[in-house]
Image 1 (cartoon, protein in one colour):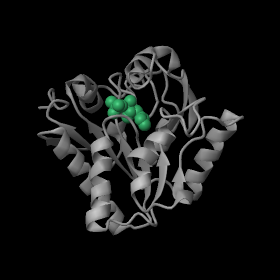
Image 2: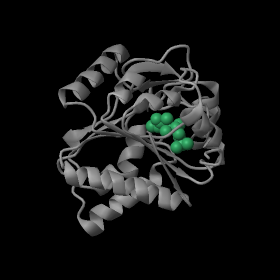
Image 3: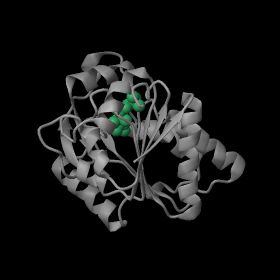
Image 4: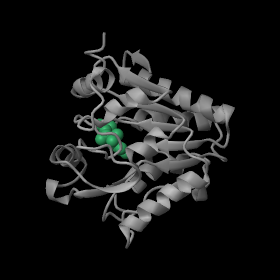
Length: 242
Ligand code: F6R
């Protein structure tokens, strides 16, 4: 495990973008796993700049998002689909057919999970997975549990996650209670993983992920078992790291 501590959110975002750009330069048909939320916004902004000013080419890149809310249409402003197009895909030269995001409106959600997992496998698996982390240690929407969830599955969101995500909605009642998420096994099968965290509110979750016991009640702790994982933290999130 590598731990990189940066002074600010901006330098953390730039470091992550540089690592991702390096991956794309070395392997232009890279399969990326992507996250949403507040944390990676700076990284997406920097990647868009690199595309516009430095010709970073996404034309052969394939992406798989970690998760999507159940019951939100693609055009809903709170869907992760909408977020990804607004913050990233609309501003780079990725091909639409190379973008994969779970369909939270699927009639048969179980079948949608299987389909998603199948496509990841058919494409040869994820080369580089970007992760954020919840205050409760969740990665993707793999919430603290009694077992590590295996592959892509439907999850019931924790009250803490619903509360945290309500900041993007008009009211807490509007926050979906379910989501589709890649599972721990899907994430752990990625060849490389970069986890980003910013701010003091993530410091404890980061400490437990790096130094704590590997237990499903702190899902990010499983990353200790991955052979190529890099944590990129700003100094507030790294507060308890010696
Ligand atoms: C988002 C995701 C979540 C977030 C986590 C942190 O696709 O999978 O695990 O990474 O909830 O969210 P922020 O960055 O908003 O603090």
